[in-house]
Amino acid sequence: MSEQERTEAAEVDQVAFDINDFPGGAKSALEAVLMVVDEPITEMALATALELPVDDVTTALTELEEEYAGAQRGFTLRQVGGGWRIYSRSDYAPVVEKFLLDGQQARLTQASLETLAVIAYRQPISRSRVSAVRGVNVDGVVRTLLSRGLIEEIGSEHESGAILYGTTTYFLERLGLSSLDDLPALAPYLPEVDVLDEIAEAGRG
Image 1 (cartoon, rainbow, N blue to C red):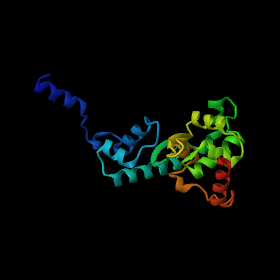
Image 2 (image 1 turned 180 degrees about the vertical axis):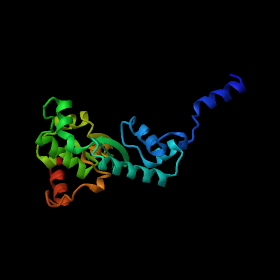
Image 3 (image 1 turned 45 degrees about the vertical axis):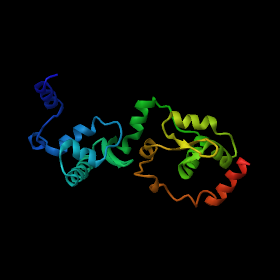
Image 4 (image 1 turned 90 degrees about the vertical axis):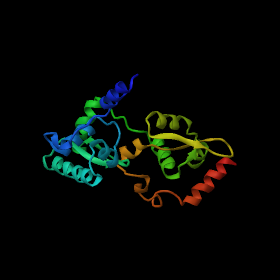
C-alpha cells in the first residue's frame, strides 16, 4: 500500500464531526450512543466518543433523565455498574415481564438466592466454602448462576487450586447498584463474618 493509500484509509477510519452540527446537539448524540450499547458505558468513554468534556457529558446525562422523568417516558437513564445505560422504567415492569416471559416467572430459587448472597458478600470464594456455609452441595446452583451471568470465575486459590467465584457487572445492573460497596449491611441478616469463616473452615476439615 502506498503512502497516499495509507493516508486515505486513515482518513476513512477516523470519523470527524462537530457535535454542534447535529440538530439535537450533545443530548441527542448521547442518546444515539446509549441506544446501541449492551452494557453500562462510563462518562469518560462517552466524552471520548463525542469529543466533549466529561463535566458536559455528566450534565447532559442528568438533564436527559430529568426530561424522561418529567415526560413520564417508558424508559429511564440510570447509572449502575460504573456506567450509564437506558433501561425500561420500573413502573412498566409488569408489561415488560409479560412481553419477555409470556407471563412466566423466571425468578431464582431460594437456594440460588442464598448461594448468590454468600458469593456476593464473601467473594472471592470457592464452591467448597460456599457449600460449607450453606451446609449443602451447591455445584448445580453455581452452574445456574454462571449460566445466568450473575457470577463468574475470578481466579483460583493458591494452595488448593480451587476456582474462586465473584459477582459480575450484570449482577450489579440487576440490583441497580454502582458497586459492591452499595450492598446492604450483612450483619442484621447473617452471623458475624468470623462465624461464617469458622463454619466454612469446619466444612473444609
